[in-house]
Image 1 (cartoon, rainbow, N blue to C red):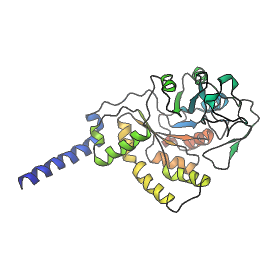
Image 2 (tube, rainbow, N blue to C red):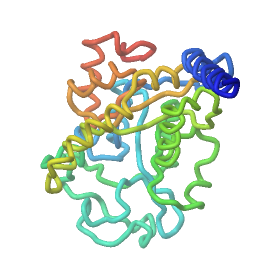
Image 3 (cartoon, one colour):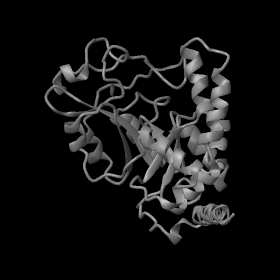
Image 4 (cartoon, one colour):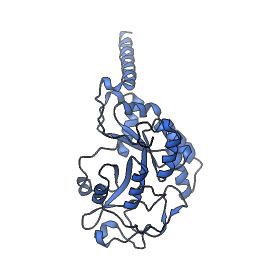
Length: 293
């Protein structure tokens, strides 16, 4: 009887302390001091409004007032950090092969029509002459005062070493561990080295996925469960109190924007920065601490 009472007391103390620290995490953890807050994030610079990952796209987004540019990186054969989503040149240029097989100066320009990955069946085309792959260092030089979200597409120590002293996103593995800690009550007790959580919205992603691949009956069912598990306002608010921002990607409709901000996400990543700007202007309650407001 005594043993059962002790066990019950320990479990009760654990549950109560976990709930208190979940609500008030700064009782145990020092809030991270991140120097910027991003509500409006331009995916690949705005792949629906300019040729993706180009200096022109980045200028357009920054001129709109975006808080953050999202981009992707690979290494060229001669060791340059190239801004490109795809490792292969096949889909976005008239050439074939890998970026890593070309010296930077020998890389081709993009096609006139470039597919928009998160809008199945759509592509971007314009009279713009800027269809070149920029270097990451040129992006830094052009936008020294803009937050830049760097998606390193390959596990390459040389590539990672060229981007030191940066804020850290949760990896796929660490997101899984984060959820495990959340649902076991351990999260409020654990320190976190990451500064930003960037996750997809399962229900939105499955719509895109089903446009490219045969849809199975269980896809939406699994996505709905994943939404409940992952897109949790309580989790995002807990992380915010610890100074960790949450970004949801890649969302391109007003309905998706609204759902994301209502879930407590700090920011939304979109292919259409103009559309997101207009949404935030029409809904200033979601644009707090944001220069678009």
